[in-house]
Length: 402
Image (tube, rainbow, N blue to C red; front, side, top):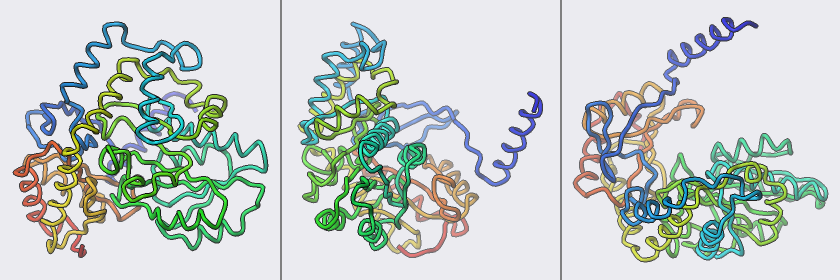
């Protein structure tokens, strides 16, 4: 196949995605402040950001980054070469204390953290009778990719439903490592994992629990340390994943686990071994973000209150609203890809930026508006959002009950 044939195939694929309302395109969206952005010549209120605590524009973080960057902007190497500094060690120790684990390891992204964790479990399994991953159907794409590329056997169980999971555990080879993989707050549905149910299973069967707390960090738990801590299961997970790109308003991810697991990760976690470390000046910002979470708990109170306000305001609207009452992720299922795009466009015309999420991120005929609220939104902006959603034309949104 020559160069022109390759280009023709790409053109054909893109045209088909356009026709199916599945074409993904980047748009230049410039921030104005914590909640306002500019798209073209239009100023919009941003209801699509994961900056749940409004820290991405916090002056203290900006000051820490500016001061620390005077001594250099990059790490220059992977952590196992020369890219692990005292700043990294201090930040990792702070994250470990926050998550109440023996150790934490910082990576450039949450995606890489999930990949490195799965790679490490794979290596541990290969020391004995192998490994099998048992994954909730709705886990994040980064976890799915990590599991599939591991080359190890895996099974999927229905979302938050454990009869199949229990059957798989009960029939497992006792010499094979079983790793259950789930999220605490699910990124596309905004609902919570059944951690009490997993705790009961853990009392009866031998397995390791990998818990992705990306969307719970900062919003739930003591000092924002996560949903598991919030409901009294802070020690349930064997490995927890957090990101610095959501509640902390920064970039990066962290694996929080035992001393031994983290030591093994440095031997087998290729996503860590072969990645340049995050810049040292971001390490100081991670510590500062954790301090803000501790010292300003009202940010958690506000974001959860805003989430409840939206859901309360939409009751009786006929909209299909998913998620926990206080979850800042508020999905509204609209069915077709076209409906999702049209609904997002109508909201944009009213000055609101809301993401239209389509397959393959979600299932076919489950396209949705994925609304996110933050502590930085004002009550008047929340009211504006609720009013706009209630006034969407019925043809743009499915008329399913809450």
